[in-house]
Amino acid sequence: MLTRRALNRASLARQFLLERVDVPVLDAVVHLGGVQAQEPQEPFVGIWSRLRDFDPHELSRLLTDREVVRTVLMRRTIHLVTAADALAWRTRHAALLRQRLLGVYRAELAGVDLDELAEAGRALFAGGPLTMGEVGRALAERWPEAGPRVLGEAVVAALVPTVQLPPRGLWRETAGARHLPYDAWLGRDPDPETDGDPVGKALVRRYLAAYGPAASADLRAWCGLAGLPAAVAAVREELVSFRDERGRELLDLPDAPRPDPDTPAPVRFLPAFDNAILGYDDRTRIVDDAHRGLSVAGERAVLVDGRVAALWTDRDGAVEVTPLRRFTRAERTEVAEEARAVASFLSECTHTRARVASSSHLPSRVMEP
Image (tube, rainbow, N blue to C red; front, side, top):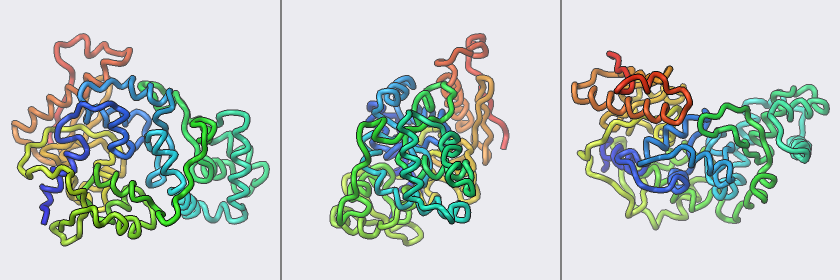
């Protein structure tokens, strides 16, 4: 049986949150199975919290060099993933994306043949990148009842594999989302689905490497895919089994790290929608049930002793922390030190450094709970 604290330390180790690691940015994105990127600038904080000497311009370079892409995948949300993973995983997410599209817009799309819509949408990109609005307005001439907003979202977020092009998502860049199909940006269409492997054994292994030990329900919460029992069964003989405090079966890779539960966990600042929280069905290993809703609301979390214990914001070069519980003096000091480090990271690569440069220490504030 693995206690909640043991699961916490294992998850922190897999997520590079127990200690920062010296790995290339591309390798980190691979290991994490992608980075949630619903908010374009948030992945930079998430990776900074995990890597030593992280240069945000390196992540921007990976995007412009087409080694990493912004695309709709897991849970029908925008993720930063490697080009290789996007090509390997997109076909397996096609049914999920269609299903969730119809779950939201079934009435609006009632008279629309989705295959015809996909074909018409893909043809529009022959002239180059388009915004979602441009796609929708063009298609509304043929399907006026559905409306341009629904048609645009249907094509770029579900029916046609597309990527969001730079400068969207580059460090300190503000740009609207312009889209191109995979074949136009990456040179080929997504890989076809492998017969007899509906989800992909490799996907199960990758998830456990970055999130395990975990239950099948956790895996599904991360990716949103159906067909998981067959995929898990195909690799079960390779895995070890545990139980959590609720009695759920947890599976894991035999040689993956499972640190001592008493291993110290440093303060870490997480961005909005970080998969370290969202990547589980049972999130109690890292966040109390009372605060579970904060992660899906886009709040940025502070981990203290490995658990969500505060929220944070940055305004005008200052980082403000709002505790969710009372901190000890030592915790307060450590949170303030990490807040200053976050403020430094967010300020040092911008052109607006006045408040930072005018002070011998970076502004940060830890409020009372």
